[in-house]
Each structure stands twice: as structure tokens, then as C-alpha cells.
Image (cartoon, rainbow, N blue to C red; front, side, top):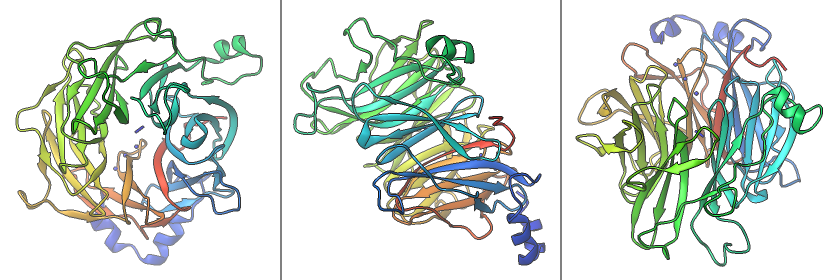
Length: 417
């Protein structure tokens, strides 16, 4: 769940020495734009917990420097997804092998302080998204003992209320704001999750891949694929006032063969889905929730697109192609994607090996990052606000722990804990 970005001519004029000095300014200085949190599946030490690398981003050069005491333990094994709270004071990390959500308070220096750990309803959580009031977690399988790796079944999505300080204290004394309440109950199945089943073919196993929410928080969308039928889907839900989810009319919506990532634009008008198998991007208009394919969709990408992000203005889209180790950049107009550069041949921006996650800095909407799973690093780019093209950030790529899996970011100064 699934961050943001120009002054390339200025960068050429600045000496390497002065750039390095700027990059080394600490978070206490005025040149730190954001803190970027990168989960890594493998820790450097002997334990098998994952870790979270915390980078501070220099606002002038995009240089990413790990803060002191980074990395931090992820609180579980194999962290695969993360998201920051709407107020940017809390980070939620999803540890797949422990079926857990770990809540961290974010210090004003970017440091992480573990607060609470909850279990997800199902098995092997893999994706997370946050609105102002709810956190949504997608599990690969519905709960044991019905489902397991030996007896797989379709996945599920759960909704956790994000509590205010008063609500959290009422639940348990001394609990901080942004504490997660118990997952919302689904009375129709007598459980606290919503199954991602195909009513037309209930015996087929549907494997979820990603989740996003509309900007309004009124809608939730989960991508999934059916290996038996070779079809992909987007499950759409409307969020009711009490936090319960209601399947949209027409859900699930057809989505290629193997949808791998999903993003909503800041206007709330469009949703974008990458197809790992077909190497393209499907776009949909949202309307009142149900998805309608945009004319011309799907649009080509690089090979094995694994992640997508829309910039804060909604004018540009960026896709991380895991097989090619590249980024594809597009301009966006009414959901239509057009290659930036020498269209119809896109410009391929090189990343580290196997980029699997992507984000844009929320402070300036000026810098973009990718987590490169096999490269064991993070690539940084500066975004040209005039035309959306990319320039490598100073000294990119930046080292992380082994197998980085996800990125999340908050503006510097947003956290006050």
C-alpha cells in the first residue's frame, strides 16, 4: 500500500563536493524533505526478523541517507507491505510469515518505536492500504483450518478502524492515537473479513495481489487472479458508515490475466492496474464506484510490471518493470496513458535489479523511489514538474538490507511523537 517530485540544469552546475555536503545534512536541518521507510525481507543479523531502513531525503539533491540507528526490526518475519497513517505519525508494517501487523510510532527524527502487534484474520497477509479512518489488509488465504498452503483457497480483505487517542484509551489505557481496533465484523459470513470468492465459479482459487482505496476513502479495490481460468479481477467494495464493506454491482471486474499492482489517482476519478503477464496497464474510470474501462485501455508497459504510482498532481504515472529493471513514465489525461519521451517508443529509466515497489515523496512531489528486490538497494529519481521526465538522484542507487519489498514515506516535520 501502496509517496512524490526538477531542477536538472541546476544540479549540473553544483560541484560534487557541495552536493555531498548537502546530502549529509541531518533531519534536524531544513534540507530534509521526507523520511522514506523501506522494508527488507532479510535482516543483516543472525535473527530471521525483517527490518525497516529509514532514509532522509535531501530536498535539493534527492540524496537518500539512512538516519542514525537505522535499520529497525520490523517486528516479524518477511515484511512485505507497509503504509503510513493519514496524519503521518504512525507506520504499519505487514509481516507475511507471522500474519501480523506491527504499529510503529514515528519520531520527529524518523526513528521507529514499536507500539502494538495484531494478527490478521487470514493466512499470509500481502498488501495494505490506509484511509483516514481505516486500514485494509489483504490475506492470501482465508483463515485456518479451512485454508492453508496444503489446501489453498481464495484470499480475503479485512478492515481495521484507526482509533483516535480517546478511542484508543477507552479500548486500553495508555494506548496511542492510530491504534488499530478489532477488525470490522462481516455479519453475512460470521467472520471479520470479506472473502474474495468467485460466485460464478466458487471452486476456483482466487489469489489477491494488491489493494488501494479511492481518494475519498469511500471505495476499496483489491486485485486478484484465478490461475485455473487464467483471468484477472478487481474486487470493488463500497465502505459503509460503520466500516463494513459492500460488494459493488458488477464486482469483480475483469482485469487482464495477472494483475500485480493497483493505484488510484488523487482526484478519485480513475484506477490503474498493472498486468504482470501481459505487460500492460489497464485503466478504469470510477464514477460512483463500479469500474468502467477507459477507451484505449490497456496501455503497454515494460516486461513484468510490478508496481505503479500516480504523482500528486495526477498528471504523470510511473510503472516499475520488474523483469526489465526499468521504469516506464507516462503523461495522464482522463485516464489515458501516453509514453513520455519518444512515443511510441518509451524512454526506459534504469533501476536496480527487480524493482517491486515504487513511491513518490509526499512533501514536494519531486522525488521518486523504487525498492529493488534482487538489487538490495533503492533507486532515487528527481521528477521534472514541467514534463514528468526523470533524472537520477545524487549517488543513486542507495544500499538497503537484503531483498527490499516495500516503500512508504512521510513529510519531514509531520511526525510529532
